[in-house]
Length: 184
Image (cartoon, rainbow, N blue to C red; front, top):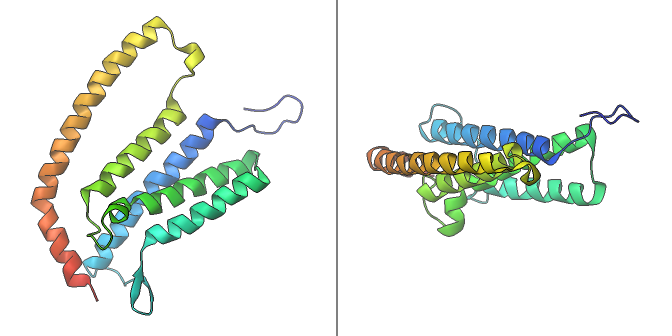
């Protein structure tokens, strides 16, 4: 969207949420791939240790999120800077929520179901902001479509949850063994 008077691209909440969603999903997927490859000893150990303590990547996410949010509050970026800020916010959220289960169960396994569930919820919230229609444009015909979509999404969420539990039962023990074998 360009403003007529300045010819400058104007960001919207929807546009920025799409950037954040992209950063969030890519970061989550890459974090899972890297952790799996490191634990399987298919790539070098990139973990950071301080005096023998593993610094989990959720800490990087917290520090990055703090910096991004501070920058957003004090500098109030616009245009390209706002888009980059939104992308970095998504990256920070991805790093942090990838290990959400560890927030709940300190010292617990990396492969907790709570982390994946939290990532799905956060991605859904970003998606709603990114792609939902404006409330002002919500008409009766949209309400019927919304109800139909809600029923379909509830069915999909139930199927996804059931499949996730089944996959966790099948693959979970092997991931926990892999995690235990890779611990220093």
